[in-house]
Length: 194
Image (cartoon, rainbow, N blue to C red; front, side, top):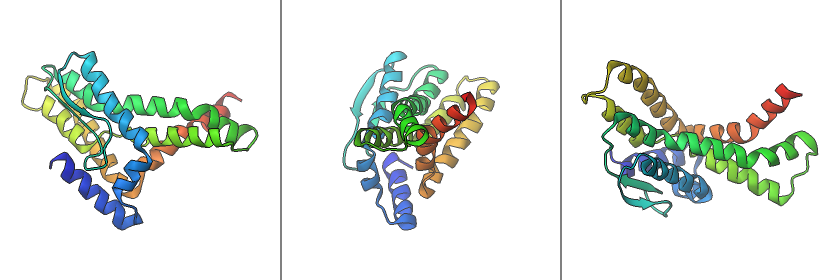
């Protein structure tokens, strides 16, 4: 299934479940889409993989994309596909952390700046989950091409998990992840270190 078809199916299912079209969700959380595509791009640059076209955000389906040459190394392909998980998760947590602590742990007030930073952190973190297109790319990089059995054993569960999480977005699992990274993580850290 091509990226546009997959995203349309997820958006239709999400619309049926909660009556909010996926394009509205993407528009409201556009910083997460931008960082997701930026992560793919940065990892391509790091591994010196030529990039042909980049769209960080658009009102359409898909909301963003990076078209690049297929890396010669399977591990590079896996890291490029998984890059948004690392960058979006870290950046979402870092951006929301001080505001989440201030609002939920210390004074309970929510000045507009803190609310904006929390929204920004959640919207970035909720786009951390790689797409099913990314998962397919990971699997294709280790299946049938010189990759060892160990590579297949390591990548297969990751691909399965990505498919589960991507389809879980129909039930807002991506939002739950974003809230967990941006709001629950600071609360847990405070509980552990106090």
